[in-house]
Length: 118
Image (cartoon, rainbow, N blue to C red; front, top):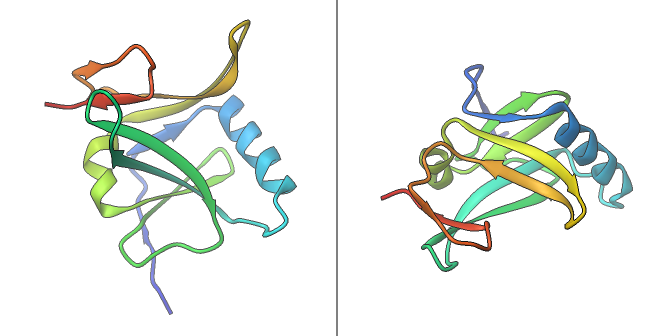
């Protein structure tokens, strides 16, 4: 059995609006996911980009957080890049979608989905 590392400090937060959307999207999934995975990966015009997806289980090196009814998992690589980040859901004339506000970002590109912390 895999023990999860549950942390109570606010490493990553999610707004009530974003949480509501995540819960609604999860309910539509046939696989009945339990977690929202938030991660950072190499790539994008500024070096790193965000990713989000649904998971049925957490991995051994995942940090498990829960806020506003959403269980989030973050892998050990991504934790350092996401400290203090906030996940929001924006609806505008340009469309709707999730936005990650990250205080660690020192440089980002105009597409808004890739960034650098150095």
